[in-house]
Length: 471
Image (cartoon, rainbow, N blue to C red; front, side):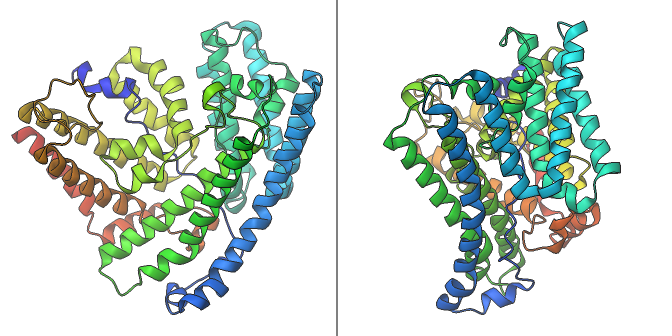
C-alpha cells in the first residue's frame, strides 16, 4: 500500500463514526410498530408526537436551564477564574444528577481518577502523557463495564464516560504538544470535563475553547437564535425518530425498505442528540469564535442522507469526534505507517465505545467499505479524468470532466446510492424501539439482523474490491 493512498486521512476524510446513545423518552414506549402505523394523522399527533415532544421538552428544558445558569453566573460580570471553573463543575454535576441520578458518582470518580493519574504522570514525564492517559482511560472504562456497573446502568452513562475520557486524553496530548504550557489545576480540569454544556450529550471541545468562553463573552440575538434553531431541530428529529418514520414506512413494505426505515429511525435519533448537544454548548457560551460566532457544528444530516460517499458520511456524522480522532490518534500514529494509523484510529474509536460487538462490527465494516471506496474512485478518477473521488475536487483541478459533467453526475449519483445502501445495512440493527437498547446489543442480534439481509452489503463490498483489481 502506497502512502499516497492515504493522503485523504490527513485531509480529514475517513475517520470512524461516533454512534451516540440516543435520547431515551419515556413516552416513546411503542412495543409494536403496527400500533403507530395504524394511527390516522390526528391520532399520531395526539398519541405519539405530542407526548414524545412534551417529555423531551421536560428533559431539554432542565439541561438548558443549567447551561443558562452557568453562563449567567460566569459570563455576565468579571469574576475570579477559580469561581468560573467551580461554577462549571457544580452546574454540570447538577445536570448530570438529573439525567443519571446516583450514577453521577461514577462519572465524578472517573474525573478524579483521570486527574490524579494525569498529575502523577506529568510529575515524571514530559512526553507520552497522551498515550498513557489513553490506556488508563480505556482500562477504567473496561473495569466499570465488566465489574462495577450493571449492563443497564452502563449503557445509560457510557456516552458521558466516553466524553470525559476524550477530554482527559486531549488534555494530555495538548500538554505533550505544547498547546498547553502547563497542566490545568484540579478545579480547572473539573470545570472542563464536567461542564453542563458538553458533559451529557457532548460535543467534545478542546480545553482552549472551554476557557475562551470566559474571555470577553458575547451576548447578542444571534446567540439566542442559534439556541432556538438547534433546539427546534432537535424536537423535529425526535418526533421523526419516534413517530413519523414508522408511520410513513409500514412493515408491509419490501424488507430492504424496512431496513432503510429502521436505519433512518436510528439516524434521526442521532441527529436529535447532535442538535441538542449543539444547543446546550451554545447556551453555555461555547462556540463564540470571533467572526463565525456561535458556530459549533456537530452533525450535518443533508450530507448523510444524500451522501456523495461513505467517507462524507463518516466526516459529517460527528464532526467534533472526527476532529478528535484525526488530531490525537491518526496523526499521532502516522509515523508507524499509514495503514497502522488507520487501524489505530478505528481501534481507538471502538475501544472508547466499550466492549460492544455491534459497534465494533459496524466500525470495522465501515473502515473496510470506505477504504475500498477510496481506492476504486481514485482509480476511476484517473482513468476517466473525472471529478469522481470521494470528496469534491477543487475548481482548479486537472480533471477533464468536471463536477457538472453528465458523466460525473451519473457516477457520483451511483456511488451515492451505494453509500445509502450500505447505510441501511449498517444501521439496521440500531433499532431505537427495541427493548434490547436498555442494556446494549449482543453479537447474535447484530449477526441475525445482517443475516436477514443475506449479508448483502458485505458481499457488495467484496465485489467492489474485486472490480477494483479488474479495472
